[in-house]
Image (cartoon, rainbow, N blue to C red; front, side, top):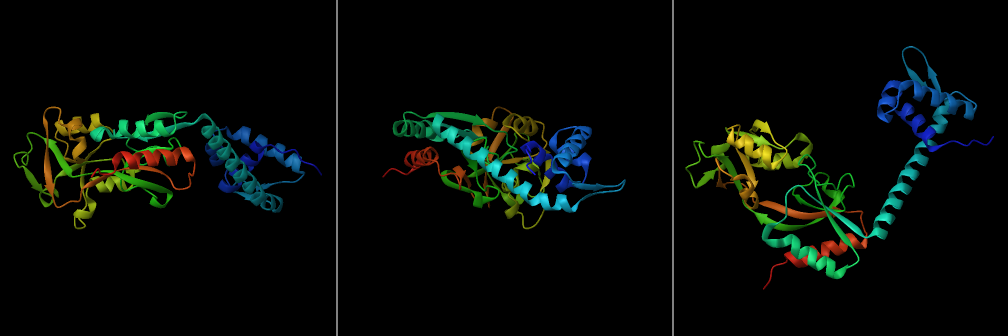
Length: 301
């Protein structure tokens, strides 16, 4: 028997087999449940056997469905890998490097310095900068939106990435200029333990804990005054007195726009700003950008 089965049919089958629930599978696939059921019936007709055993309470794989599932999953994985390989080949051909950032790496003119070295080495290549919201602490690396990115350490799933530190800066605390601690030049972090803090979204992962200085709290949980996902939200929350926030010294000018002050903090480590890329990305264009970054940021004697 020869079957001409489309990839869509296998993807629909695999979704139902993994969910064992037609409605959840339809939601996962962004299709209607009747359309999904119809497609499964057509696939069963092509196969010549029932793939699922259904009753009012549950959906189960039939013996034929159980035999088909691992092969379908393998074929779908191979096709996904093929699509990724094609996308990477197309990107190499077009010689465009997408660089993500959620914080501008303007520090000391480092970005123009990297660009000039990169374009000198690869005059055929184009650089495209992509601003990424704060909820993605990898600045587009995790979902493949960006090829390289300027990020704050630590990264989630650090084994997935390689990076080099671009800047090491003290962490300051920002607060409304009416705050009771605003008249101090240096503040011990222990004096901030009972203060409400502005926090990154939960999706920022370990970076949320880092900017709350969880490691310096001695096990005491942070009091969250508000969540912020942009410079503008942070400034407005500070002015409103919703909390204080830690930030890198290089970002202080973005926040101190009136009504907000920053102060040095004693008892916490400095922040690390890095240029990162995926560990499994071996494209010459990415590594050329990493070399340009290293040349632009290495200390001069």
